[in-house]
Amino acid sequence: METFKIVINACFGGFGLSDEAIAMFRERKGIADTERPTYADEIARDDVDLIAVVEALGGKANTQYSEWKVVEVPAWLREKGWLIEEYDGSEHIAEDHQTWC
Image (tube, rainbow, N blue to C red; front, side):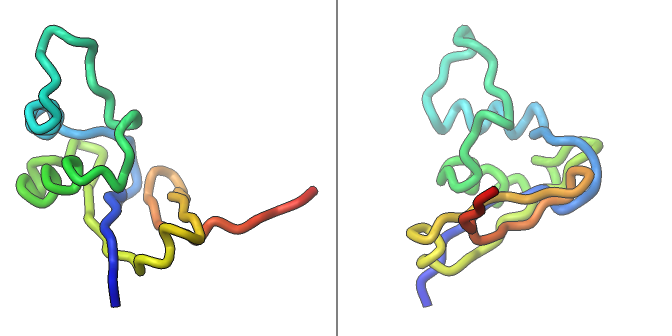
């Protein structure tokens, strides 16, 4: 079965990447230090460079209030659509469903 990876926060708390993780991400993307700051919430969770950084750094990618985890999900989810749901910062991946009100 084909899969793809998504990064989620696996603990209750805040949302952020460590300074080391941000620096490594910026380096991988070729973003100069003089350009505007990079914020974790602006990075797509299925970004291959984000995934590589979290896998390379492990716990060093975390902040005091985050615990990053790379999750593999079925490839068909890309077509169906997915989203990250959270409760007090602890996240999980869900299939995107249509709703009407």
